[in-house]
Amino acid sequence: MFERSAVHQRLCWGALYLLAAGVALTSETRWLCPPSCHCNATALEVNCSGGQLTRVPDGLSQEARLLNLTQNTLKTLVRQQFHTLTQLSDLDLSDNLLVIIEVEAFLGLQSLRTLRLCRNHLKIIPVGAFAGLTNLQLLDVSSNQLLVFLDFTFSELNALRFMKAADNDLVYVSHQAFTGLTSLQELHLDGCNLTAMPAEALTQLSVLRSLSFHRLGLTTLPNYSFRHLVHLKELVISHCPWLESLSGNSLFGLNLTSLTIKHGNLSAFPYIPLHHLVYLVYLDLSFNPITYIHANLLGDLLRLQELHLVGGSLLRIEIGAFKGLAHFRLLNASRNHLTTLEVGAFYSVDTLRTLGLDNNPLACDCRLLWVVQRRLYMDFGESPPTCITSVQLQGWNFLDFPEAELPDLLTCRPPRILNRKAQVMKVDQGHTVVFHCSAEGDPLPSVRWLNPQLRSLSPIGRVRALSNGSLEVRYAQPQDSGKYLCVASNAAGNDSLPVSLHVQTFPSSSKKPFRLKGWSAFPSAAPGVNGNQKLHFDVKTLLIAATIGFLSFFSSVSVCFIFMFFWSKGKGQIKHTATIAYVPRSAMSSSNGGTSSYMETGRFTMKLL
Image 1 (cartoon, rainbow, N blue to C red):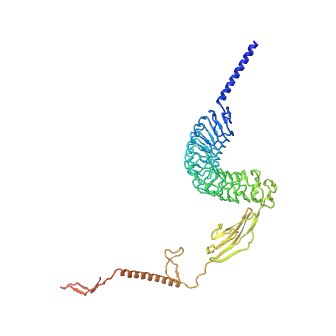
Image 2: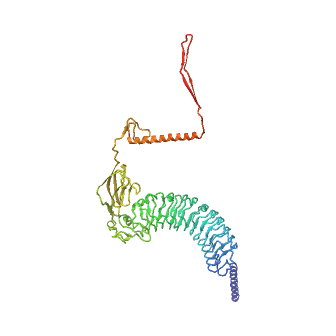
């Protein structure tokens, strides 16, 4: 019994072994792995990366879902190169030497979802190369040498959602290049040498939500560049060293929530192109030589939360610069030339959570007291601000200020006008007048001038405020007379100094004028002249006017006579005949005792022939 049981046990184990061997043999038969490849039957993956392959290997399993052919030396993909791999969903051909992709090279890959062709040597993609990829969702052709996108290159990729064409040498995108990309949501055209915005091609991308450009060769962003991209939410334009301005309607039609224009050459903040972006939340204008953020010009960006201005040329952020931005919570102005940032620049500092001011030549005085007081509630990024230009506090970190000594450390000195001697100027009409005004204080006060109507004077015009604090009145006129006010201001207060100007009119003529009495004003007389006003005439003026009038009349008559003389000469010999007839006086009286009578006087009749 025991022997029979042992034999039976051996037979069972042998059967199990044979069954396992058969299953293994079947799996090996179905998953024949090409040389230089590693196959994973469980993950349905074939990995041929780094196998020094010069062509796509034969014998790949038809059930493979992932095929990795990276880091080989493939140069050409022939027509229907992968037609047997009908279940393939991910194909990676990155880091090869691909130069040619033939038409219908991927035909048969109807299940393919991702196709990566980055870091190859492609210069052009022929029309029809992506035929059959009806379910492709991601295409990566970055880091090639592509020069142009032809019409209908991607026409069969109706399901494509993400396309990357980074680090290429594109010089032209044909108008119909993106036809068929009806599902595309994200497009990267980084690394282009485009000298014109492909606006016509972009009109095909009706559902695009994210667009990125890199190294554009533009000097200005033209009007209506993105006019049909109504669903676009994110726009990135970077590393465009010649981009100096944005046209007023360059962003027309967009409802962006995120806008990045960095590493360009914008010297002024693009207020006008941005003003309609009321849904904008994130704005990055870093690494542009922008110098000023002016007051009261950003209020239209109602939902703006983050503004990045890193690595620019900012000299000043004016008071009221962020007026109206109730949701503003992050400002990064690191690596600029700011000496201060006053609390009045913000709508409310209570919403501010992150402030980047490092690597600025900050002067620690009363203008930055609010920053130090809120240092426990704000994030200063990688490094907190440091005092640079203040002599006493040079090198101090904002986090090192003791709370009890803040009022004594961060102080300002009110302005004081230095020369308060009264300035009264009396000049004749047409002369130029200059009033001087200089002030001292800490920080150095700004000087402005107010006219007699208490309006600020600009640096341009006949009456102007000069950059050195002086007031210049050129070619003074009587209406310039009055009191002007010099006002010196800084964060600690104001000081003022009035000056007076009296402009005398030209002296009147010493000769007694000739007056015509009883002449009423002409209807076209200037305002202020009424009907009882007497007009004054100078005798010399009258004589000159009469002489000019006589000469003009005599010249006209002379010209007429000369013309008639030459005209008559041109008619040839003319005989003149005159006939004169005299009719004597006649009288007629009534007869038969009539009472009526008639008498006619004599007359001459002359005919000239």
